[in-house]
Image 1: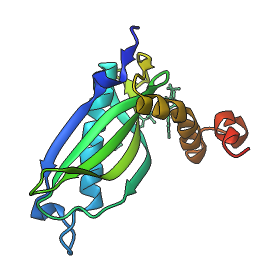
Image 2: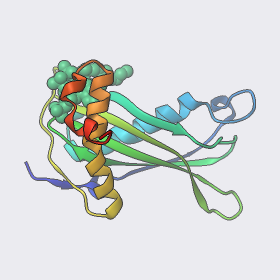
Image 3: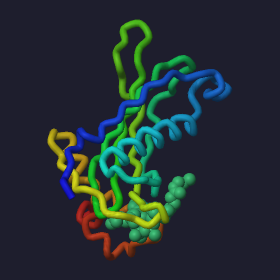
Image 4: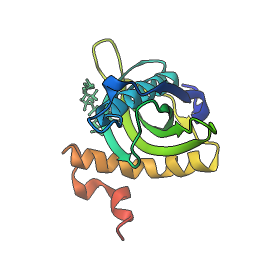
Length: 169
Ligand SMILES: CC(C)(COP(=O)(O)OP(=O)(O)OC[C@H]1O[C@@H](n2cnc3c(N)ncnc32)[C@H](O)[C@@H]1OP(=O)(O)O)[C@@H](O)C(=O)NCCC(=O)NCCS
């Protein structure tokens, strides 16, 4: 299988925040943002694998800033590392200033997707080639995030999480 560059999976999803998507103090619901991120990330994983993909885990989400009603929100999703059948997708979420149009980073998230066949069985995906400094940084850290996610899900014994242990030494 031909390896693919990280940028080939880039997915940019822009939409505004409507009244039905806010909480009682007029800011975007966390669940609405999670759903938008899931859509953008699944398209990125599909672009990398060209297979059916399912969300295996939400590894990290940081809601750093409130997103007010009417905001224009952009989710940028890109595969940060591909393993055998799983792919880590890293997302940056930006809000756009209404007057200046300037974009500021409001949230970050990391999801894991697994490519599956029609029966839902995991299938191999192409390797990922990181090119920029940021892509290389995210690629390098992805293995320990995978191990942490597997340990938390009870699918890996902590003693086997070698890469994860190395950051505590
Ligand atoms: C995701 C799913 C396909 C994994 O199936 P599985 O039987 O655990 O398969 P495996 O153990 O072979 O794991 C497949 C891959 O997923 C990875 N994986 C499984 N659970 C994971 C987790 N919690 N975090 C990170 N990676 C995980 C494994 O490490 C493996 O990766 P690799 O092939 O790249 O090494 C299966 O659990 C599933 O279908 N879940 C439901 C998905 C879904 O419906 N999502 C939407 C929720 S509404």
